[in-house]
Length: 270
Image (tube, rainbow, N blue to C red; front, side, top):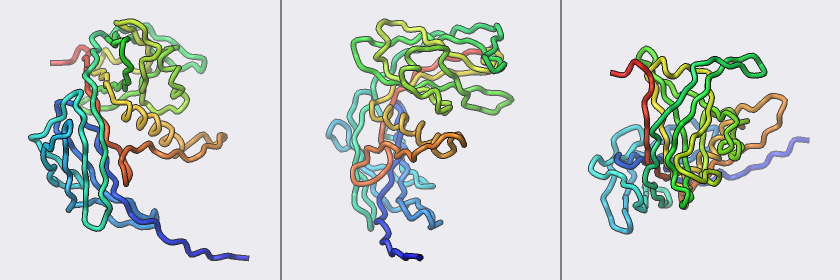
């Protein structure tokens, strides 16, 4: 027997996405949720996006295209609590708050050009990054590696080389290419983080970035790693859907901040 159930559509809500970097203007992407069977454009072009810093009104972000709102005169600063207030005709207003920490320094990359092989016969190389973390505070990080080969930029996966800090996060099995971690197992500065990768980073223009993130961004990226893996899991492993972490009150999305420190390696930088 076929039973037809007429379920009403859930009301569309505003979707706000902004990962802001200190020293850079805010860029907010504004859209709305909709039924998965619809194919309409979800950009919102007539929204109002207000930004406040430590309780003071800083200004509005103007629409610049493709759902993005920005204002070159308003740049994010570290250790400032920003509040985003967003409205649009036909939708309930939303808001969110977050602050970006001051950057922690990454100042040295050590690497071994000796090729090694794992248990499956794949080759890899060892790296160590020297990080200056403050052991007196609770800090959150994300590590990114970008490589330039023949004028093409790629974001390359680095993994922990039996690294206790990354092992503690439990993310390695999701193969995301994203390394996020907190400093609860870092008890002294500087700290040498042990990594491995299949790339010979020293042969190309390579930049390692250490993002000092808010706890909000850390929680979002942790959920993103699991959400992304659940989209195409191992065929032999059952995986439940994962909801992305959101701090947008009254809607969906993320508003979170970070500061960045970087170091270059390779012989081909001008």
